[in-house]
Length: 322
Image (cartoon, rainbow, N blue to C red; front, side, top):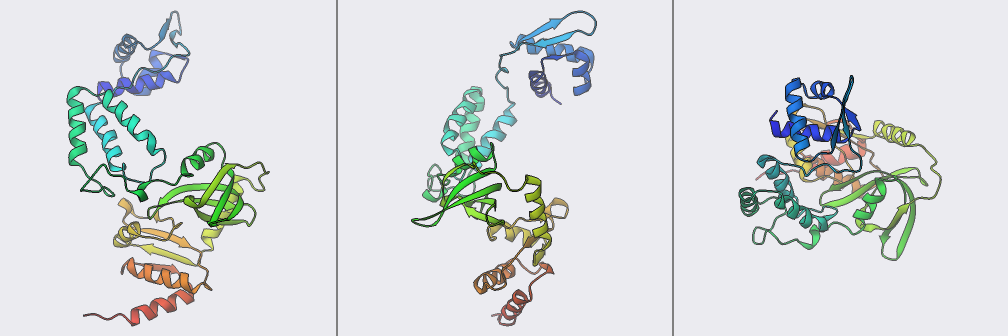
């Protein structure tokens, strides 16, 4: 471990403690006593608020109500952070309005040489969702839904929410839900919830949510009970599919909202997903048949409804080749 990296880690370690000793630093970072003392002296010289406690069993006290000194990044760390910003600048991310101020702060702590390199990186690197003709152009469909920030802010405080779901304009539904996940799938933000009134797991487009708030109703089930219901539902799924590497790559390109792929092989070489299909929904069955064929020849069905199997066989029988 490089010295700069070690010193930064030690600062973060002691910043979360009111008191520490040199022996603790030695054990935590596997360094000699002399190295630990030199690192602590360097941290004190940078202005970190430490006082020495003399006597047997003494050590260092960390003064309260002080902030950790400004973080120091290596050139490689700065590039890694900056590239992550470039890669996602035209993605549907929440808190997008904060990106510019964060980027300015990152550039502000860099040396002149590092600043020049970061600016050059911004010119030569282009990622998916970027318009090559105008890399700084943010397309209208790149903006995250207006309700996304509010939903995230609430969910990190309390997952039991009351949301207004407006599937059709002018016809809002008030839902009492427990939030499981908020995720982006096929360029659309979705929230996976357990509907506490209907006792169903649902995937709601965030773009159709209005006026989210922490629910004032009493929870009917605990979090563990809800997760147990979800696990039971997965076990009862009527469509269980295993994918090879090609299938995984195609799955990533396109898949129905709400399907979670679990990797089963090393280096994401194989995976499996579970779906509970409504076999009376002819349109949904036809869609899944076309999509499953798109995933390629490496698809293996551990479980499949007879209704879907018939459609797949019909699709394969009618295939023609030029």
